[in-house]
Structures are given as C-alpha cells and as structure tokens.
Length: 214
Image (cartoon, rainbow, N blue to C red; front, side, top):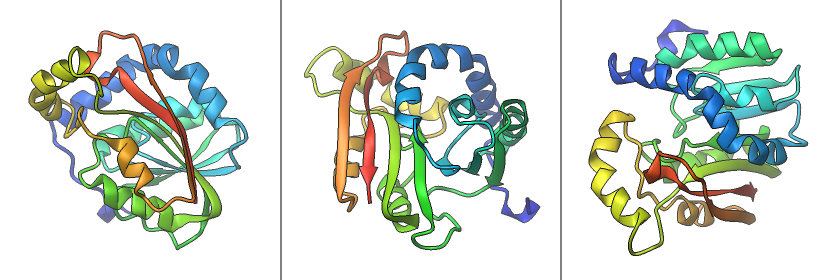
C-alpha cells in the first residue's frame, strides 16, 4: 500500500468507530449473518467491497477470496488486514473513498456494500462509480439501513437522533433514501427486500437488502 494514498481520518471518531465495530462484530453477525450468507452465496473469487471497516463481512467469503477493500478510514486498516489473515481472505487495501475508485471501467464482477451508503458523503456519485467499474451483468450486493416510511415511531426517532448520530458515526445519515438512489443509479435491474431488524439501535432498524445488476 502506498502511504500517500491514506485518507486522513478523524483522530477521535475514527478510532472510536473502529473500536465500536470490533466490539459489535458478534452482535452484527447475529443480526445480519443469515441474510448476508444468502446474499453472498455464489460471489466470484474477486470482490470489491466498499467500506469494509474492520472486516465484519470477511467471514462470509470463501477462503482464498480476494477482496479489494475500499476503506478511507486509516484506523480500520490494521484490524481489517488482521481479520483477512485470520479468515484466509486476501485483502487488497485501497485507502480511498467510494466516490472515486481507482479501478478501470467495466473491470469488476461483484461489489459489496453493507451499512456503508448511509455514510458516503455523495452516495449518488458512489453508486455511479460502482456502476462504472462493474462489467455488464455484474452485480452490487447490498445491505443498508434507510429512511423510515412510517409517519410515527421510527420516523420520529430518526428525526430526533439524526444530528447526534451523524456526528458520532462520521456522517452516517439515518434518513437517507438509499433505495431511491439505487433505483435511480442506472442499473438494469434492482431487486430490493425491505424489512426491519429488531435491535436497540433504533434509527437503523429500517433496512433494505438485495442485488442491483449492471
């Protein structure tokens, strides 16, 4: 990895989020494991993952998989590489943002995004970039939390907690309509399952998961 590629992270929140992700790794597996295993089944031997954090998804890839990890937070890099070694997954780290991925056009068969598009500063640009690097017929596999559609309950909770949540989790937008952005992203097909998880992390309980095909 070229050290000049490193994106400077917030020294407080960057470290805090890396620690939180490691702490919640087992709980995240409990919440999302079955769904991720189903979505990740049949992924090719090389996958681009945007925002892999400390490597929560590496357990779902087959040993020997090569993961091109687009992760701008430098405080995630050490745990991510260590998790790759532990899981027998080759991690090629790219310390860059999802809006500008340094890969050629139409060069990738699969991209993975889980709980990431909420935090990307320009999600529409990131989705366009994913479409650019995917080959025709390639797929984006996603699990994302989204804006609640109810007029009470989760919607009110999201409005109340929106600003402190955004600060604490480095720009995470709990009211982002990621499904709308994906459907407007130029994919040939977008299959979406909308559901709610049951967790104390109330603002992110409304979720979507699915596959978008180039």
